[in-house]
Length: 538
Ligand code: GLC
Image 1 (cartoon, rainbow, N blue to C red):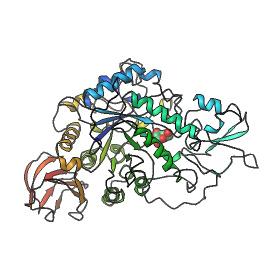
Image 2 (image 1 turned 90 degrees about the horizontal axis):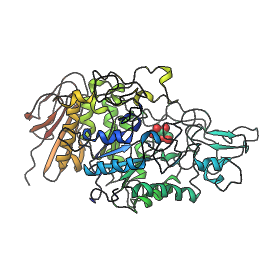
Image 3 (image 1 turned 180 degrees about the vertical axis):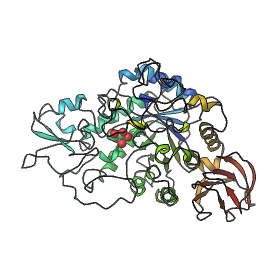
Image 4 (image 1 turned 90 degrees about the vertical axis):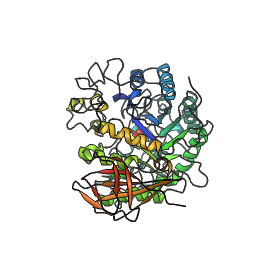
């Protein structure tokens, strides 16, 4: 068991690449069709440690705890154990050791705002109005007409309140009814979650991705949400909601909750907390950095992930991330995750290469979702009897495709979700061939690691170089690079004379290298380029 971090460099996460593993779908070591921890151990070569590895800095595992799977593990029934189908605590310790031996960090998913209805805390809480744990959850009397206490909607549709017949009260659930909200106004809840964090930190975990933190606190007077909302400033945010979610999420008190989590993380050296909340950048930026720097180290920013393939929208997604975070805070970027359609499906497979250049040359921290490095797409049409998630997110959670063949190298049994054309899209195929998407991801990550400018340099966008072309420079010490991404299918000629007269191609999505004239830079359709610039004489 390892309890020391791999190294004590402060902010090891600066410029890092985090790889999200959906444990159920990554690799199955025992043939039951479900991914597991030893399966992950067996596939670490893909991630880090050999010349052919992707070279990511950290992995983040979606929840691995015992759970009745109403929300596929985001309904936790025991915070300090591993679900039977994923293995044992001893397997987990081997995974920690194997990651650290490769110089890779391991992050877990912390789900602090709700438990499963099967968690013993909730079983006790619902047993009686006088149970000592009653106040660990958000209980309220019915409205005078016997209905829910107020009008709050839940994320997955319908009322956020569920009636408990035995005790005659309603409990609040921001997500599924099987996920009752914990009551963070009760300090005992903070203590219990803090102890769960310490349990994993002591086992050597390097940090947590903190789930859905906006739901930690609801209004203590349970005021109704107004039944009117303005369209969000962020395309794709809060689709289909009938009301403005003012009183049930993102309450000012959430900051106190996050400060409490941070105090626990700070008891250990070199640990990181990455917050997840679906909100525009100006909101998430309030949870990171700043003079006090006592909340999250990083927060997911989904503006790029939710943006359409549109030059203006992507320009804004980048520039808002740069402009709206406090100085010193690191922005984060991602294109896909287990909750949203994969970007290869949303934007199209043919855009995956230039999208990878964009994602992996921006400042801060970039997160990959397993399978995007080989261009996996969502399952086009899951048979009805193979659906698990009522919110329809199975399509992006299908098993990782390691090899061609029936189990796709994921399992020797029957995969829990069907694979999507592993004959054509798989790791083995792409690993050995230059020019594949996997090869491009590997080269981009290597470049990011080797280049101080890409890893920790400043960012400056250059606008108007050519229609549909994104462009920015990254500068650190004596090193300067310019990134150029043509979002159009057709060729473009860009004028980068404001940046420099010439440069040397470090990487391109098409086969080219050497010196280039930046006053008239010809770009292929959907070409992404990283160019090294001459350093100004001092
Ligand atoms: C987060 C998770 C999502 C889950 C929800 C409730 O958004 O990513 O999968 O359904 O929180 O825990």
